[in-house]
Amino acid sequence: MCPPKSQAPANPPPPGESLYEIDRRILARVAEVNERLLAIGRDLAAVAEADGFRRLGYSGPGQYGETRGVGPVGRTHDILRIGRMLDGFPETRKAFLEGRLTLERAAAVCQVAQPGDEHKWCEKAVGATTPEVLREVRAERVARGECPPTRRLSLEFRPQDERDFDAACAQLSRDLGRVVREGEAVGELSRHYVECRDSRRRRTQPLRSLAPEDRVPPEAKPGARYVPSAVARAVWERDKGRCQVPGCTFHFFVDLGHIVARWLGGLPIEANLICICHAHNILMEAGLLVIRGTAFNPTFEHHDGRPFGSPPPPPLPQAGHGPSP
Image (tube, rainbow, N blue to C red):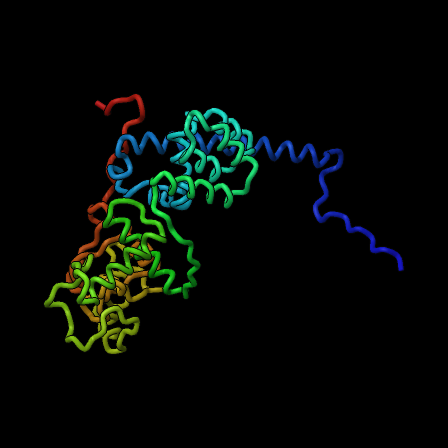
């Protein structure tokens, strides 16, 4: 039998251009991207220095980054870290701008490197994978007492459970005034549940709850996913099947939204259920839309307390410039 013929690549390089030339072009573009990331990081650091995230109406850099398209929470924090610290580590900065270090590895080096041992950490980061670098940096920070030892767990969520957990993380971040990572959120939620349910533990007040007069008899189950059909019909008729957010009259893809979330003890009753379109429901779950009161007399606010739909606060003055006269 004849050996099989090697197949030509699906996307061969253009005629007259070698793979080495394409590789060099990719490296040049990576360097351009990293230069821009460093510039964004410096701008984020300037906003943080001026307490700008709170003044702009955000809970922190993570929420700002997700809203403004910088990236997910973790990536935004990495960009902010290199913007604050990378200029103090010239060797690491050069490796990052040359494309020899990824954003995650450069940010990790900034967490542990000192002026005297930057070369050691930079060499490790260049010659290792991102998980290896993160493990070494974590171990070093634990040894220094900068963070507690942790254990990695793998969790599986059903789709609705994942949405509820994301909403819980957003609520915790707003309540604590900082970004709460997933691992910390699991601990906070577990403690909150145990303290509320176990008489041997100190009880804490729910983060948000319905007023006593709005609760239903004790046989109702807080947090239940099932909404009785009679309640759903009553809410639908009361709100005429339209989104109740001011200025929105959308009547397609309308959900029954819980003003007080199920995981906080919100009950499937008329006072806690409101017709809301899918787009505004996403804003509410992300914490960008806050509904206060009951469904019979609700008030709608932005996450910073402004009435929903009102214009945002004025932007911060540019660096090096005072306020406009």
